[in-house]
Image: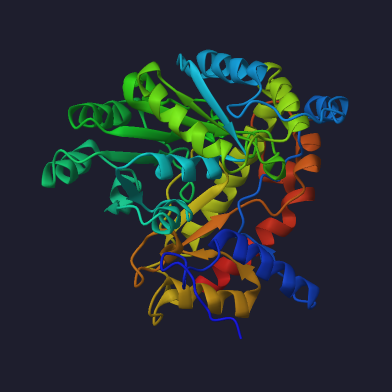
Length: 415
């Protein structure tokens, strides 16, 4: 019998929570259960047709491309950030999803990872896999789950001089909130003073509900890496293409990551990279605006329902998530923590959400993340195209009724 022998950093580490809840939801559906799938944050919207056409056109491309990415794509990404974000980031690295690039950055940079909490489920486990130093800075509801300059300064002053990477994500997963320019400027001042590298994960930037995403790179251009890709604003998660854009002064880090990439994934699929050039250069403004209008309308409806059930939740600003404080809900009382609560919720109602503990919150905190994506995005865009201005709940009800029914089931259980 072959003995069990795993690296200590992997032994006992569970699968990614978002992927696990998606697989479990699918299994329950296969068993005949009615499940409201609010766990995995996959864009409900189709890939724009002109981008799909570009993929078809380049399906014959079979050669390995440069490790750092197709030159035309790197130029397109640089131009995209210049045009959309007001940033000039001359060095771009293309990878099979920004998730892989996050991992390679932690592999390459000998420094501590700093995460505001709550945060996306995979940031911390990647640090654990690499046996990298990891520290969290808790945020709270009163600060809109945002890291403040004051809190970051106190953290850095506690153990000064260490090489560190601060990872920010906004509009955020799991909270659907963003930062104001003033908040980002305060964080930038601290990052500059303590020589931090900032990875600004703006994968949801184009899905700011008002199209008003501001990058911290405007205030800390010399130390900010901007992470992006096709999975969220372009609906192409399964295509697996992410980008890191670097300032001149961090070219050495990009080069080191490219070395690691050359020994791991080699390069991203050629047809996908060619199609990505189209996505970044021929931005479908109507598609983006209608996507934002749909999400904006749904956010209003869902937040209103949750508040009526005693849930503490902020008005949402971007992406398709919300992070809820359930501590004052009658139905949440008596649970030892968010994991037990969310498990019972799934068993009782078929509503699949993720516990706050999966997003680096304390085990005993009663919180959850809901991804409001269980609807037909293509049909929603078609309805949106027929309405000028703000979309009402009634406008979208033919395609979002099931999603709202799931939220109502959740609210009834909590109340």
